[in-house]
Length: 221
Ligand SMILES: CC(C)(COP(=O)(O)OP(=O)(O)OC[C@H]1O[C@@H](n2cnc3c(N)ncnc32)[C@H](O)[C@@H]1OP(=O)(O)O)[C@@H](O)C(=O)NCCC(=O)NCCS
Image: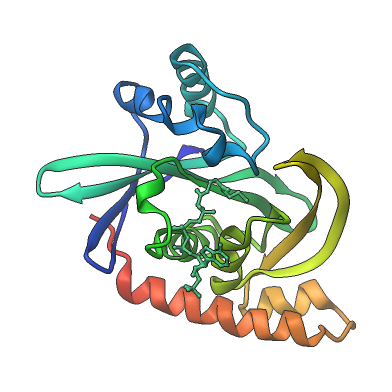
């Protein structure tokens, strides 16, 4: 699948575009970007250099198990790359599933609702365009903004994995989250004869709200 189609959305004053990366912008990730420990402390990544970015670009460009977007701020004809988001580990078995992740490597853009909005757009794309049944994600404890942004777009915590990474001075657990396609057909097939708990039912309502928001606010140029 490689790259996702262009999606445009408004977040407060900012016009955002999720669009394919290009080789020319890969240097923007590097310095300080993902060479900064503030940015990567809750991620499974080391400080990268330009050559790593080119390698990663070549890998994702032809990867059939992931869909990646660059996150750009639009200013007239200008675009500024500020991050990336993806659906990865696409896998078709009894259900069609994928993992998800996001990175905003310019700290000045944190706390403006950007991750929350791009998760909603990506969830809409995953369920509406790709036809996924379930999207999962993992958030290290100590990264509440990431967990909150996912919960706002319909994910909920299914369980905790203990002691998965040493970060910021201590061993960290991680929350495992999932977002089930809220359509009646998928929902019934996923839960079968089980009764979903309160957290799952509340998450379904949030997922539907996220999809409604994306349907009204995401434009496909
Ligand atoms: C995690 C990350 C994606 C969040 O992006 P963001 O655009 O700043 O997130 P948002 O602005 O949408 O904020 C999400 C929510 O978290 C809340 N939040 C932000 N910082 C918080 C904190 N320290 N404690 C609790 N909540 C916090 C926000 O208030 C918002 O909730 P609200 O809308 O109910 O007020 C961004 O910080 C990032 O890229 N970090 C580095 C990479 C990373 O950790 N990626 C995630 C890996 S799982």
